[in-house]
Length: 122
Image 1 (tube, rainbow, N blue to C red):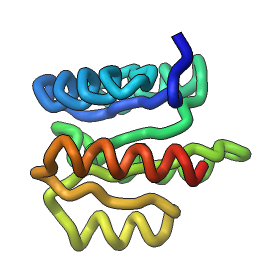
Image 2: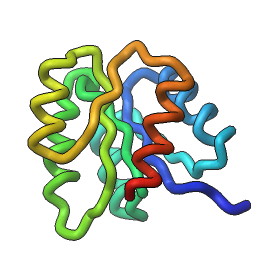
Image 3: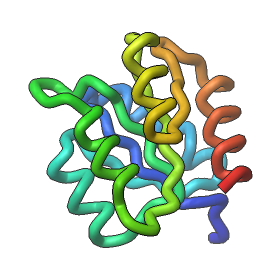
Image 4: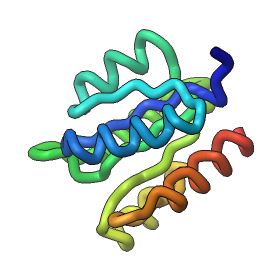
């Protein structure tokens, strides 16, 4: 099956991960998931995704550290979408790291539109 792109979803909330994963798979994307930063880094090491959706608040850790690492990867060319309800923090980090924000709570149409836009731009 030909896919539209490889996407990594990083969020510590299993129901959100499942919702996003199913929605994007239905749209033809290959989706991998991680519930924490360690697993996300391992998956990125195996194969760099075209797009990473990452929650800025990953349980007891801060997703912004992962975002900084991803943005600093040499030749990464990975699009980042920051998922958060904290608009101010997300906008500040997004501007520094070339990412965009998807504010929680978001709807299915907003998610798909955001992903499609960033996959096309890449």
